[in-house]
Length: 109
Length: 113
Image (cartoon, one colour):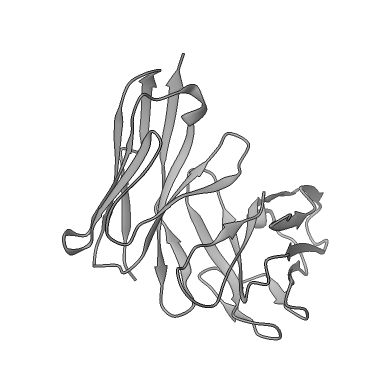
């Protein structure tokens, strides 16, 4: 199957800083999602972004399917942004999600 | 609208015991999934269902069974729990058409001693 690699594995930021998280794929994918897992374990959909760019408040995401990567931008980070960020792609007709190993983000006040 | 509800939230089992995790969704979704998450890893698919009465194996199905007798419910069973099944279990659902956007429950934290 297609391999998913996320970088960096860990990230520590000061509140107010910006960051970029990356997701690389070993082959082209036709759908991609970004999730945030908060410190309580809840998985929250951030973006469904098979291609192009989307923005939602301080977060934005860009997927370049032909070059097999996606980026998640967090601007003016807040402590509530802490947690683990996963990218995942939907595989086959059943759409089962294949996850990367995640980027753990800690935002310090 | 509750979305995807998982019960129980926490459970401790002894090796060899059995239990069933329940996932219920009120969004009339066709597809439902069970994933497990181990420390420092992303989620891995255990079993899934593309409709009432159907189930199929995912990446890590050994030691688990599932049933989808009603469209809104997807049950995950452990017949004889092992310490290797200590994990956090997530259920998800989605529609059977359009964008593949999956909605997740809050998770069940299971410890097998």
